[in-house]
Length: 415
Ligand SMILES: [Zn+2]
Image (cartoon, protein in one colour):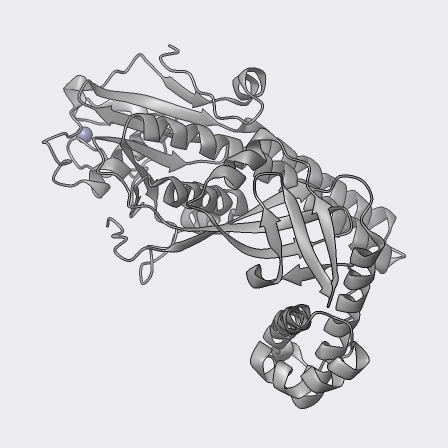
């Protein structure tokens, strides 16, 4: 079912900036004070069994004012907020038993709400108050990517997070109204690619955005973790630390690729005023779930890719429709027969319809999303399906070669 976005949604985008030169001494001291305040607020909150920022403020503000007489009041309040979120995370795990170790935030950081700092968007200079009469200026390293956010006046500023070597600024805007689609890009999510069909007035063409390396990265990291667990079996703490590090690296590398794929898909969709159709990974409530569907649900990269696509689409006003994937890989889109036998790479039906198995699933998603056809009478027709052409929206080699940020695409590459 199409998702109607009636009320404008507030969207956030975190942008990382590096800082020119050394971090000023006062800023470092501020971060240390902030950490101290967070950690004592965690203790106070645990003691009094409260987690909300307001409750923590009421509880601890006076004492902290005495302990940290110089800290800018707004920073102190946001330290309570950080402490509150640590406590909420902790509370989520409380069901598993008593807390043996009170968490201690080691990471040097501080967070400032949007009223608590100033940003010169022209020159990229952050003005951060430390205490009455003392401000530090942080000069940010700016690239074209950063300028996009700084120059876009429709973006307002959210919170700022200061880390020893960088600054993360949240930019906010209300989601633009999605355009009215004139074409459709329907994509079925597979382990190594997005496959489906692009439907326009000129007929329909199979499309693919491939990410074969994601499965390779996953397998490699999985093996590494297995090996680490074996070689460090005598030292579980080291083993856990190294495994976590492997996991972080793996996620970073996969997410990077997913962003490239999403950018390619969305720039194509935007250019052709297409509605993007994806399978609804949540839409199977109350139905018996097969093994294959459970695997779909549990596959982290798929969900991640969907999240990235949906988020970027909302940011750019590209309409996204989620379609129920029930039987999408087994149904014939022409006659409706369900195929129960095992399938090869190709789906072929008694009625004479043949298509690549993954592309066929994409066509079914399209049919589910637009059972009556699209506005303007546009609908999938087997006669206008270009069997012999595959449009490549993204392939990792091509993406890496032509443009480093992966917004490139090419079309009409025949098989
Ligand atoms: Zn058929």
